[in-house]
Amino acid sequence: MIESLPASLRDAYEVLAAGAADILPRDGLAERLLAAHREDRPLRVKLGIDPSGTDLTLGHAVVLRKLRQFQDFGHLAILVVGGFTGQVGDPSGKTATRSAQSAEQVAANAQGYLDQVMQILDPDSAEVLNNADWLGSMSLAEMLDYTRLVTVAQLLERDDFSRRFVSKSPISLSEFFYPLLQAIDSVEVRADIELGGTDQTFNNLLGRELQRSRGQAPQAVLTVPLLVGTDGVEKMGKSLGNYVAISEPAAEQFGKLMSIPDTVVEQYALLAAALHPQQVKELAAEVAAGGPTANRAKRRLAREIVSLYHGAKAAAEAEEQFNAVFQRGELDVQAAEFAWDLSGSVHLPALLAAAGLAESSSAARRFIDAGAVRIDGVAQPAKSYDLDGAALEGRLVSVGKRKVARLTNGGS
RNA sequence: GGCGGUUUGCCCGAGUGGCCAAAGGGAGCAGACUGUAAAUCUGCCGGCUAUGCCUACGUUGGUUCGAACCCAACAGCCGCCA
Image (tube, rainbow, N blue to C red):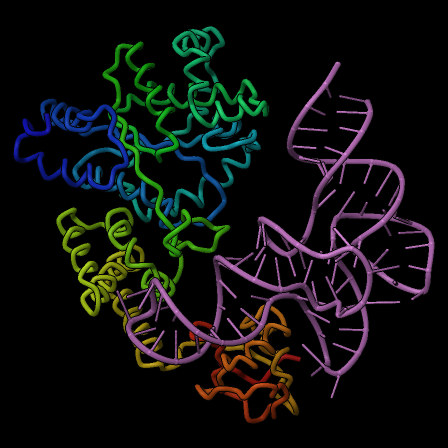
């Protein structure tokens, strides 16, 4: 199948298949690409989204980047907002019943969420639909008709359900409906392909069944893997503090990306950047070479990713700032200002805590004693907690290499 | 419903009446080295303008000059029985 693709589709296939955790059925993607080519129409590529209030991270962005690639090859992104399913709560990967969101909450979250999503997608070839529009008005008879296509045994095969079943923790009937509802979406939007994380595999495959029953060509399913966090071990997530948010300043992103372990550079290049699979291979080889070559490769990766969200110019500036601060050991001259009463004697631990450079004044003392606190780059001696305020005005105070503030006189 | 066990800091886990802000490990943070990578070494890892004070060992109450440690009740978790 893949071999039989015309040359013009080969490259598209290579790019679109790159980084996928799974493509089901195996030749489904190639088959759909061929069909679109034959019929001279764009593919309808579905992605279900559950707007949450949070900032998008590079982890969330993986599947969106994949969708963007489809757009770049002329296909149509179909975003299905879970206005209805959000009220049910996705049981995927959960070990307990998930708290459902009200329709109002979903709507409130949707706008800010979509704004972020559209930084990655091309809004001109994206359709945003809300599944409340068809699920909300569906008759019970119609619904029951769909339920005939799924058996309980099938549902129980999913490991999140089976684990809960075995351990006798409750599974509400509404949760059983979730995969079905999501599958009905595929019928409604006539999806050619559905994207999702690996945890969505079951739901997405169910879409095929329902489509077939309604006389549609079953969608191909393409799942993407989870992105590992900047620590290189755990999955990227807010609670672990190992994430890079797409809305973060360029310099922050650059720095965080430079700190990822070598072992995950290839993964990031594949999943978080917009590089051709060929370029990813080159990058991986450079990292494996070690030394300065590896460093250059990682820089390139960081530049590529930062450029996606802030543009090439900002990425170059971020790298320059990185060089200044971490390579030449200069202080970040663009440090935020912090106003504090500098008349008379100043208690440094209290100042550091108030400026957010330390979590508490006790922690600030520890930093001072450890030699991590510098004033204009000069390490503060241990146990020296009280300083003359007049000598601090306009100075740069730093804790470690990342936390810096410029002091100004003010405050109460 | 009955009996037994268990509950310690971000996580794991020692401690069973004063020497306990609580061993050890992991994670994390800082310093040295470096490619803000890895590996390695060192220090820190409850709060407080601080040679002391305060809060903390599931919750509440009690015994005691003194409780993470003993007692009681309650709650959570685990096991056995019904």
